[in-house]
Amino acid sequence: MGRHWQEAKAVAKRVSVTLSTRFRSIVRGRQRPPVDHAEIRRLNGYRDSCAPAEVSFPASVLHDAGVARWMREHRLAIDVRTMPELYSAISVGVHPALMTVHADQLDTSDMRRLAAVGVGRVVLSSDEHIMSLGAAAGGRTQNVLLRMTDAATTDRTWRQFVFDSNDADSAVDAVIGCRSLNLIGLHCEVGTAVDDFVSYPAAIGNMIGQMDHIRRRHAVLLTRLGLGGGKIINSADESIIRRDLVEEIDESVDDACATVRFPRPVVVISAGEHVIERRAA
Image 1: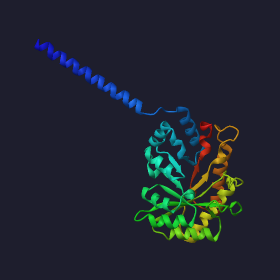
Image 2: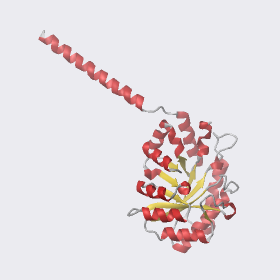
Image 3: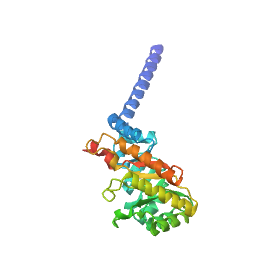
């Protein structure tokens, strides 16, 4: 009797362990979000098509939990444009170092909160941004870019600095003169409502020229060139990347750098909301 009781307890324990293991597995399976493999293939195809340029995706792609997990696991770059987007990206586990925050929609109080997070890069577009972020950064150094535009596209409702202007020189002076800020590059939107007529070669030529001007004026070498990528997606079929524009970008960077003998910077294309329009429709 005693022997059978011991055997029964042993079997019950094994069954209990098995059921417990299966239950935990089921719970974990339910907690892991489903993966949208088609969407991931599309985003990955965007990256591959834009090579050798790097790609930074909009924070809105993180609304899909499966895509967010994929981006987090592959440490892909994210563009953030509002504080809710910043907090959302942090909540799904995206490391702040992978984020580029575009500050044109942020106010000075947002900039103070931003400084405490420690994001990888901040794109500054006004003197107020420079002062508030520099004052809030404290003992750490924040990498920054300046958002630039052509004089012909300047709209005072959009904050940005004009190429080859006194305002741009003053902004560069202010950033370089601030110990808390490290100027690493320039950014220009192409294909947006405010900059829609600007071509990629024109934007790239202006930015390389401005980078060379900064190098000669301050002996500072900028290494990052950011471009809005709105025009790269074919408007007739949003699943198709316009490879001709990608090649045009690559050739324009080479030509501009060769003209002024400037070391080729890292080119980063901000995919923008266009990259998710087809999925959201």
